[in-house]
Image (cartoon, rainbow, N blue to C red):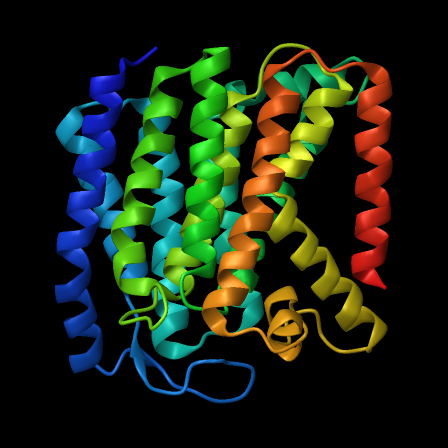
Amino acid sequence: MCDSLYLLSLFGFSLFSTTVLTPPLARLASNKKIVDLPGLHKTHLKTVPLLGGLAIFAGIVISILVFGFNNYKTFIVFNGAGVLVVTGILDDIYNIKPLVKLLGQILAASIVVFFNAGQYHFVLDTFASYDIPALPVLILIVGFIVLMINAFNLIDGLDGLAVGTALIIFGSMALIALINGGSANMLALKVIGAGACVGFLFYNFNPAKVFMGDAGSMLLGFLLAVTYLFSLGGEVSGSVVLGSMFIFAYPGLDTMFAIYRRLRNRTSIFKADKGHIHHVLMSLGYSVRKTVLLLYLASAVFAGLAILLLTLDISATSLLLIGFVTVIFTFALFR
């Protein structure tokens, strides 16, 4: 396991790299007219440059290269991430069709799953105990990663919301890894991811000077899903299941809510709308900043519960109670 000074160095270097890279990429985006225009389901009132996601990606990659843990596992992860970033940049510039975008997401997830299949032994062994073969399980893992990619793409609707949520999740996963032990490389990647999020948040919090675009939001969802799955270990339990749900609770619930809402309204699940949780809060009169801070608080509460569930020995009664309250809360949200 990494010592605290090393982790602090990783965090600081990633933060610095992303902070330095964001302004020139924002200027490049403005000069090349790679911008996000106001209107439709959007909440910003002025033109904002994109390509912030490229700064996040570059900050993370540079940190990995400088600190020298670019092993095979990390190489495969960032091959998949590279495919995703290219897909996102193409969407930011040309507004590609949803199906093409989805194919890019599936390709990125498939690279990291099928070229690193051994890293998912916890999930594979769990399903193998029920005589379920590996291939459908690996396909299911690809589906989960694609779901998280789209979850962060969907919540990236207010200044600082997606990157701040990612920061909270990266931080909680790093803390869990510190307490439980595990892969030093995965812990380092989570810390680097958190540093990049802080570096970009300087420019992205309301009023945002730059957006990360689809390239950034999809990248964060991808890295969070992959690093979490790589870190799973031990035995299957109610704590692991519930804790995993709480780690991704806010983006996961918002995505489920969006799919349910669009199917109920008989519209395409790819069609953007103003029915997300952040839109609902703003319709109640909250400002952009207050809405984002409320959702940060919700994410922090869920993260705290996940940390407790995944690091402590929780009784069966407590697990049932937490599960019951979660179901009631989810049902109330859908209503």
